[in-house]
Amino acid sequence: MGTDSHDTTASRATRRCARHALGLLDERETLLLLPADGQTLVTLLEYTGAEGRSVQLVLPTTLRETNGGRRVLTKATELQITCRIVADVLVDEPTLCFAETHAVALDGSATVDPDALTVIQTVRPQLPVYLLAPLGPDRSLANQAVLGKTSAAPALSSAIITSRGIYRPAMVARYLDERDTPLDVIPLL
Image (tube, rainbow, N blue to C red; front, side, top):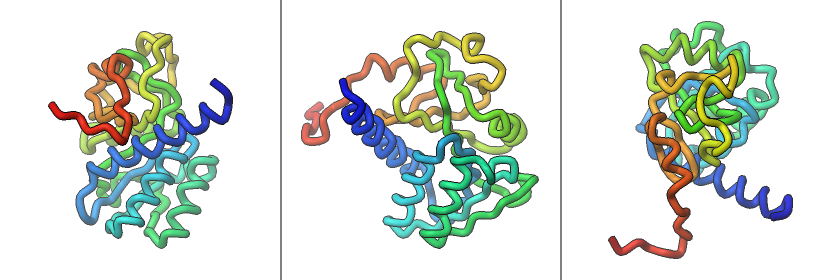
């Protein structure tokens, strides 16, 4: 598989993951965004704007100057979506948290940026935290011990959103066993 093929697969996975995340949104949500590279969150914002959904965004000050943070802010400005940059993320009373991951292990733990991990540990008791992992778990990563100290334990997330659906952290390994049904095929069962 060449680079172009991988980019196409990754882009499709990102779009599908963002669509699944979009399905979790009710009207007038306040979303706490924790970007890594920002691509899945930017795609989510594009879908939100295309559907005319009313959302507000909260971005931690610590993630503002990251590449992902800048991408999210640029897209929010372009779509005229309010995005507050805050030091205390709970002040704006967000209703959902979406955090992009770098890698997901088979046990449901995931690596995130260190600043994002700090925020997740702070907000998890009060707020649902959804990890965005378009390509699902990495077959070679068994558990949190393999991921290192910037990993979020499975208990720190409500669910993991992938291109194939939304999984409880303990069940994310099922992603690897499920086939991706082509878009032009309608299951009859």
